[in-house]
Image (cartoon, rainbow, N blue to C red):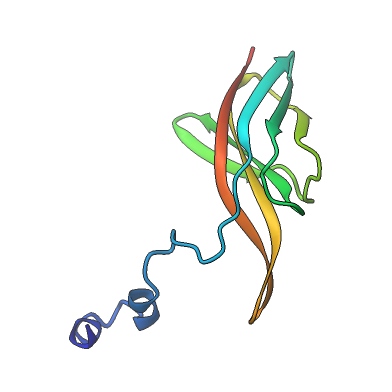
Length: 125
C-alpha cells in the first residue's frame, strides 16, 4: 500500500486510507414513502417519518433544462414536520429528494448527520 502511494504522487494518502465514503459509522434511517401532489405550479410533498426521535428533514430539488441537471437544497432550516410545499416558477419535471437529519454526538464532538434520500418526481403542467 505504501508503494502505491509513493508511485502516485497526485493522490493524497488520506484518500487511500479512509476507505469507502458511503460507509457510515452512525446511520440515520431515512424517511419512507415520499408522496407528492401538484396543483398548478404548487408542489406538495409528504412522507412517513423516520423512526428515530429528534429527526428533522431537508428537501432537495433537481431540474433538467437543455440536457443539464441542476440541484438545489430548497429548505435552509431543518423541517420538523413531515410535509413541504413550494410554488415553482415554471412548468416542468422536478425530482425531489427528502433526507432525514439528526444531531449526532460522539466522543469527538457533535455534527448534523444526514440519511440517505428518498425520491419522487413531480410533473407540473
